[in-house]
Length: 370
Image 1 (cartoon, rainbow, N blue to C red):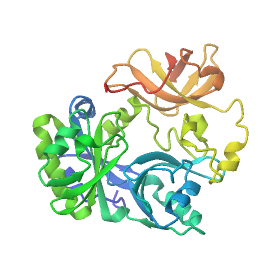
Image 2: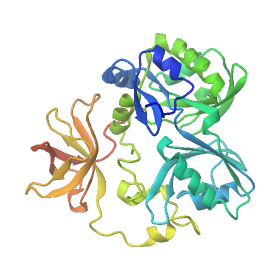
Image 3: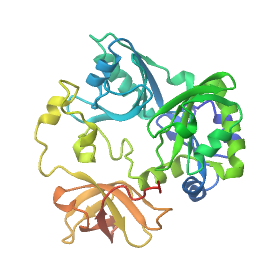
């Protein structure tokens, strides 16, 4: 793992006894104590995540909105300053290069956050697509750190954190998929009410040099409230319960948005965008579609396991699966034949030669109380 990159918080993770794994070319904490304990902490109190491996792109210029309308699947130029939007980078084929979140920081300025493993692919796509627009794209990933606080008491944690000041709109007034600006110990702080766990939460972007002190301050403020550091293992089971796709599992160049239940993300009425022509073509009627599966017992289907019908015919494949810590039974996402995709359809997961009964269910598996 000597060639893997580390975040500005790596020393903090080592001091906390984290176990590490390769994720998107970064050496990231997979757990600190227990996957289950960290998962349950996020559902009942709060978890603290280092997500500095995510890629950040600053887009600025008079044509910034028009450029992103062309480069992404969604309608970006109508966004209001202060808001965020989930979108997709598509290939000409209509397949998914990456899923991203776009923040409108000014009339002529946006922040786009992409997945770590797709940083180069997104950078290449933006570089290719910006030609002809009065806009500039700058990869700012290496200069900043991103820290997430997720869980029912997340707001209480960030409000109590020493050193955070001048956040406007205030944490309490910040809507979901919106952002604020403030300062942490005198350095710029960007705060978004976004996350990848199915819980309320905030993602805080600061210069690398401020990240260790912010991490320490958040831990100190959150410890009395039940906040714990949480790793990628808990993050994965949390996002699975929330029905959130993971690139390389539910999303890929071989999948078009409608197959993954993301047709709503595509602004098909835009005059032009990369992938528009391909998406206008008729998708094969037997193209697999993404569904949720709830299984019996305690044995969970994992990525790559076959899904079969009552006659033993393979009708699909698991993309993500786990024994749900919150719900207490196995859950999975899978691409299956449209004829087997209706909610309530009985199917089976082939778990190492044993057929485990499963039922198609609507996503998400878990929704927090509002």
